[in-house]
Amino acid sequence: MPTKPEILKRNTVAKSRLFRADELHLKFSNGEQRIYEKLCSGGPGAVLMVPMLDDSTVLMVREYAGGLEDYHLALPKGAIDKGETPEQAANRELKEEVGYGAGKIHWLKSIHLSPAYMEHKINVLLMRDLYAEKLPGDEPEPIEVVPCNIDDLLALVMRDEVIEGRTIAALFMAKAWLESQ
Image (cartoon, rainbow, N blue to C red):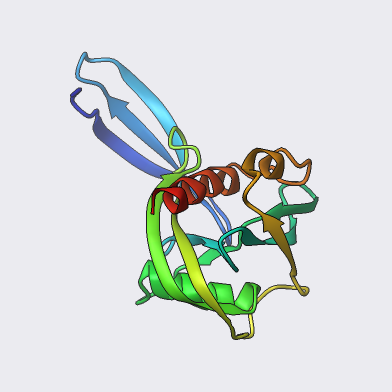
């Protein structure tokens, strides 16, 4: 295992309502020095839910993405509030975004989107034994819930509107986990 570089200096170079960018001055074990930039996470983290209505039906959401300036089809996700566990946050977010709670919640994995320059990670949770329950959310418009068949997973992830890497990875993990049970 390589020796981690020494952080010589850390500066915040940009900050917005959503993001903070830090500059890291690093010294590697071979003496080389570099400056890396990274987007830092704020708060306790996030959750991404794979809500299974039944053995074949996953509930996805069509929502607006500012980075795309368009709508896309993805799994529901949201922030973990201070004091919440990932499971509590996932159940709350599912009720807010999809209108269901889960009787069974299985944590699958924490994944990072771009670890080379982003600190952000998201917890992927499989939600089963769904029951109808709606909580008010903070979305700017109603979210369209789209039932999708997970049996032909490749066809699902190859749809033009399914483009988010976290969603695609989570669907494959959930399908494999379900088949192993």
